[in-house]
Image 1 (cartoon, rainbow, N blue to C red):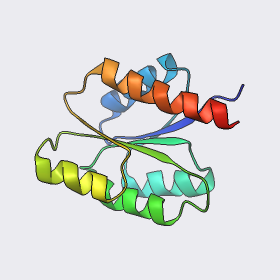
Image 2: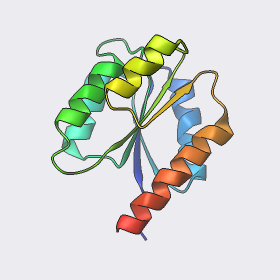
Image 3: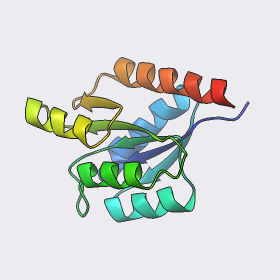
Image 4: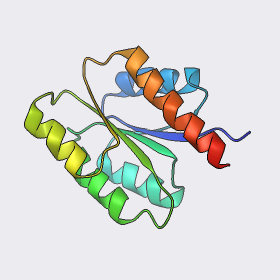
Length: 128
């Protein structure tokens, strides 16, 4: 059975690695991007099944990345889980409006992240 491919887009290297550990615990394959431009380049080179996406990145913000992913999916449904410190209702609504499937806030609850990954991993495996 193929593993779901998860791209973690988080500019803090230590948090990115931590998220990667949870991705692996969830039974998924982990890839990393530390900024928006490299995330988009990786996404275009090999479309992941899931993107865990920070909003506040040093170049392209996560809302714009989410919009681009949605506009360029080309029939491959990518799951977008936003994980951000922006916990206000307006940011949450903006995240959902740009196409996020989940909007989790930092500091994040690892159990919620693992549950979300498990739900989408199961959908991925059933579609294979």
